[in-house]
Image (cartoon, rainbow, N blue to C red; front, side, top):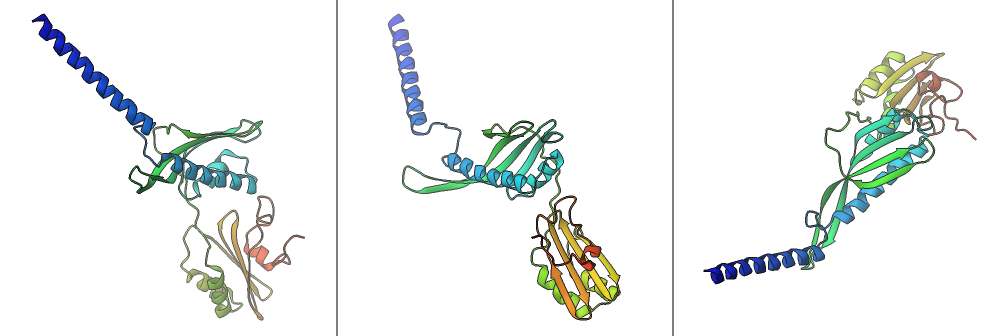
Length: 250
């Protein structure tokens, strides 16, 4: 009886050893059994998208927490999960982003497998230096409700044709602008002065299109990124009517 029990115990131990060896071999072939084979590639892709987010932060000279969150959320495949702090130089600002990364890998049989992964990043901005942690554990909870900006892409030529047809008549210009069917979130400003009509369309801080109609015809102009920085040139119909219209800084 005892010999029979001993044999059963030995068989059980042997089975555990075999299974354990199999699992170890599987992990040696694929280091993380829970991960997809293209995860590393997806992390790299997501990291490049975060690089572009940080480049935009610098280009727009951002320093306030809400501006960081708003700008990050405008980038494709980027969701803001949390933001803490107030400004870059006082409290510092910490953002947690969830980014969709696309990855590819070659399977054992030589076939290519690919797919998307959700990768999270922590950005610590200021107060003394900026730091970034890639591929962190994504926190639970819903993303922040950050609105997406509309766009004025493809509107330039349409606006110029509409203004040329309307002529320097304020009511006709207002009707022409309304007829463009723009996103309701796009700010619209129309004003008339001394036989001219000025128009300003604004989708976001740096997406501004100005137009001016005179008896000689219609003109449109997009101020430069520098001119549209906070505290600089306003995106307004008055600017379209002023001597600053069409002039870039030297």
